[in-house]
Length: 112
Image (cartoon, rainbow, N blue to C red; front, side, top):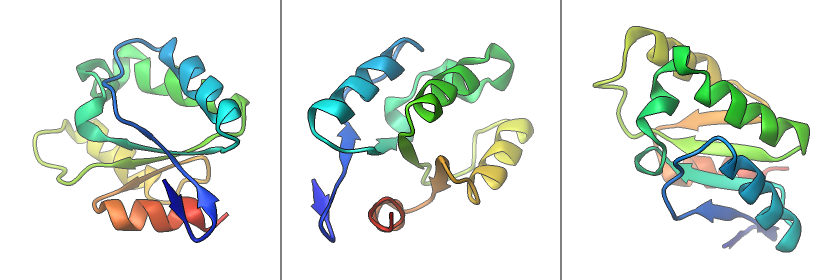
């Protein structure tokens, strides 16, 4: 998609493995974009279990290639206290930012 002249890629398929971060990076290079949107429903349960390391490894791979990721998490209900703290911190992030609304996520991605 494109918003305000900025090309934004969306992860439409579910992510199952950390290594798929490199698929996201590859798609960014292919489509000449460094802005990615992902819905919470497309993330695996391991992403929400911080002790698994999935979220940290996945996000670090994107950071290494200067890819910005906006995650849409419509509700914080059902998440562990630790993951809710992670989301609170991610609402101010530079490379990864969490949003409750898709429109806000798109606006952030289009802002740089």
